[in-house]
Length: 121
Image 1 (cartoon, one colour):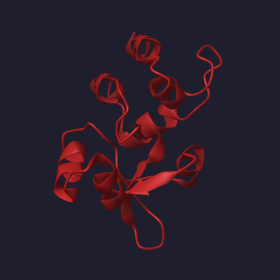
Image 2 (tube, rainbow, N blue to C red):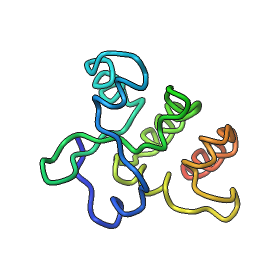
Image 3 (cartoon, one colour):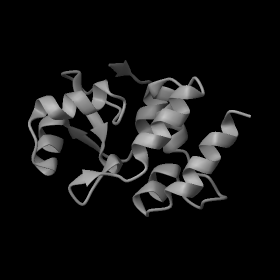
Image 4 (cartoon, rainbow, N blue to C red):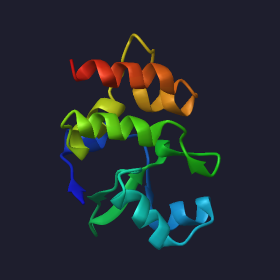
């Protein structure tokens, strides 16, 4: 699991612990850990107890945000680390507008993926 610096941590407005996500998704915590292991979610160790946490923006309407998994795969294939992916997803992009994470939550995944693919060029 990834550790992130304060700058990246500050970009993410809210975090969720794995048990909270499991409850929201109505699955076992082991399933949430599997989603992290498979690269469908990014979890980082944060806080005083260094607990695993996931950006709250990755969960909407009790499910993983549509398009997130594919976007993470594109970024990972471009050589991004988890920390770099979080930074990219939560940095405002005037051309979207908003952050890529917000655009995914608003079902504008095609635009986000287009930008992610352009990073590889």
